[in-house]
Image 1 (spheres, one colour):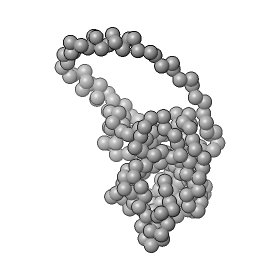
Image 2 (cartoon, rainbow, N blue to C red):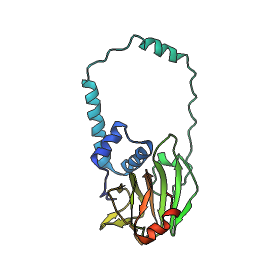
Image 3 (tube, rainbow, N blue to C red):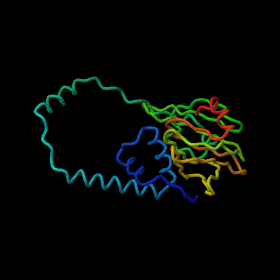
Length: 216
């Protein structure tokens, strides 16, 4: 598998620093499972961050620090959650990482002809919606842009946009500056994990007509 499209270095650095929104974190982690190149970059950023912390001068603890720690010793301990088994068979969504399979999934729902969405229920609050998007062979999406950030990780199948090919493992970033129209290749369904903030903004007369009926 040859991966041609990757997150920007600043996004990978934010992932390493733990500053991404939870939904975006899932999208980047999904890409890292398939991409040794980006995984190595993140590991390097983590090492740099650790070195910076090591070089920081010691901070003086407050006079109440010990008291606050002792007070927490008396707090009740929440029992560890039982391991959760996979809720999604691998044959249904090939390429989906094991850590995502352990989340709860909604049902597939119709979005547009040959396009279906399956929401992923996140364990933590997030401003980002995460879902699986499945599009049939040859599907031509309506031209659109975004009001927020959209991260797309290809799990199976492939699509093309702006003359570029996006296959399994590839990553695509959309925002208000990007105006695109993905077209799914004819060979098979294209299944992607998508982390989206904001809404789609459809272009053209047909896009404006169907905009009220499409919600991702």
